[in-house]
Image (cartoon, rainbow, N blue to C red):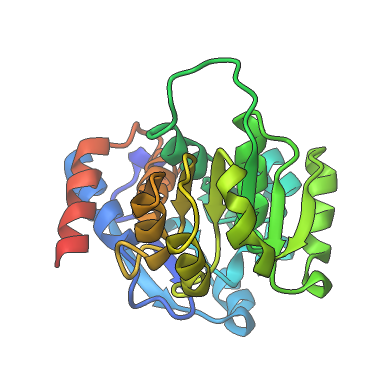
Amino acid sequence: MSPTDLTGRRAAVLGHPIAHSLSPALHLAAYDALGLAGWRYDALDVTSEQLADFVAGLDGSWAGLSLTMPLKATVLPMLDHIEPLAEVVGAVNTVLVQAGGARPVLVGANTDVYGIVTALRERLPATAGVRRTAAVLGAGATAASALAALAQLGCPTPVVYVRSMARIGSLMRAAHRMGVEPHYRLLDRAGDELVDADLIVSTLPAHGADDLAAVVAAGPEVTGVLLDVAYDPRPTALGLAWERAGGAAVGGERMLLHQAVEQVRLMTGRLAPFEAMERALLAGLDA
């Protein structure tokens, strides 16, 4: 039985904290446009310690879950199956609840990679076959997705800037599984070196790149495309400094939109109504 055969299905975004999430607005707009009467999508505050109990309570009324940090890696051992991309990356941001026997079958997927690739392509020059240089800021689960996304865009050897070399073990293992070969450097070098990068993905938390933004603002002209996955505040200090220095900045809300579009497709079995979701995103950002 496909998801669209059922009415009143549930879905939710889980995380801690979660009150700021725009995901409900995006998914509910999609359900409305698709005519999925009775479908609901909530934002639920769930910590890493609470996740196992929550997942154990899922039943056939659920269509899926969206996961934010810090749950993207925590959920892995709780799943029945993990799609190959999510397994390689080591991060699941989407759980699909599928009909099973005594209990539903839980399948982990990753739509963050799709979101990053699609958001960057919106601003990339339409030049095929060009070898690009790339950089990633941060070393968490979203950074692993960024490595996979950059590899798809032809950048298998990005530079990864981190606050501490002691915290890169998980990312190094993910990179090895992907077959990519990043170079690791401390974050305090990024301000002087990003000028040479064609593609940059910042996975740092809100305000985590503010000091770097000040260095960019005082530095030379840049030409690359920056995606800052943070979108609150909007624009971020780094995105604003990057644009003022001559580069192209992509807000994290574009990644949020595109990964949600793919989540809706996976959870409902229907093509997502992109324009309706984009309108809901813009309304949520302006609220």
